[in-house]
Length: 321
Length: 268
Image (cartoon, rainbow over all chains, first blue to last red; front, side, top):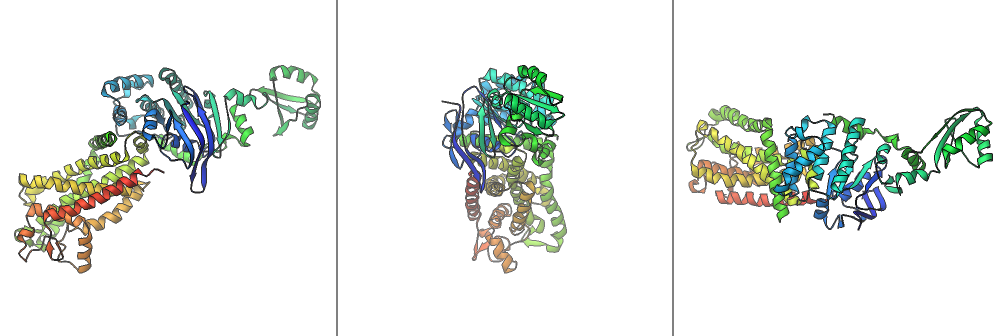
């Protein structure tokens, strides 16, 4: 049995198809990334998995429990950190944690030690008695991660866990997530549109317009692009293209006057290529493809295009309070 | 069943905890009823004069104001649901393994405790107003205030289950609650008014809640209805007793509560 099993899952809101017949499985212990631009269906999928939304088609189970028929068991199996904070700002961190413990029926004997342990892990132990309204955005997120784990869930859902946070805080959140995963034997399901964060995942599903368009390890996804990415600038671009076709049977593309193509082993390809090149080389660059390149290739648009939409801006404003 | 009980006490616990921490809300909740009592009382007392033998205007509106305090306070159940939705905390509640019915009942319980406390604080004013308090009176008052509170909490949550913003909620509450309060006999007896107002008031279930509380305070009920009464509510010539009044409120409460639980349990 896999920790998360999704088969033919769909969700329609009226005419809008938010999730369109998706299927995948996440084995126990994996860090699974759900990648896609805003509005691609990531949050809708999470909301179905955590029982907040009912699917309009297909089935899904978490920890072996059906998300419609066994809601309570699903709820007990999962910890959640949503995109937007779900803390009570007027209460202290401890009061928020205790509320959670009561709500999930965590026995009193376990509760206090567990709270202590988790708050130490996310380095908030000396702010436990402070009201959450005095916390920064990053601290709130860490508190939510601690709270989400209070009832020993098997799966931790992180919906855009670092959206709107500065790079330093983002790195720290990730350190915490990775430590926790080791200590708690967790399966982690996260959504993100930060490609660098997706690199932490063992497998990635790329979702666009409600459909899964690729699912593999980050390395395999990048390898599928045909190896390393070469970008060169030449005095005679058309000559360069003809030359590449003739000598290596490569059909390059031209973007902004730069000739780009992929080769399996860029580092050994380069010296030989430069020696024999006749079309007036100005500059040349070889790099490993990133997930951004994968995304661009698969969807025809960059994931960052819509990155800072209206909603994000509003969210950041809300968070800065 | 365990899920229902856990829901009730966890939600009620948090609402109370939060109320204690928000002093401004605690204080502001007395401002309006107090204002009504002092200004209406002082303003109309001499103009209107005696309402019934031994009952002047301020003594007449005082029990009504207590009822009003409790019912306005109870509507806060809805506001807190909308508030939680707006600030995200509602998601934490909805993904927890608790039954939705438990959550609704918990909100109601928490709100009722607060509203009851607010109603009782208004009792401090009894000597100033010239109303005699007795232990028996207080004992009778508690169940009446509880059923009023539960009914109005139900109404608050019912409205809140469809509302996404506080502004929207507050506007709807103004539209619903102001007519309900003004046509519930808090400020005037509903028997001696133009027919349209009398009919509207007597259809309004709150009228019976207010009437029950007033009877408990002033003892003006069917017993003293010798013909010249002006205070007790009559329906088709029959003067309502406290028990009959209470029954109307209980039925209203059951209907609103059920509707609130159904509306709140609906999953998208």
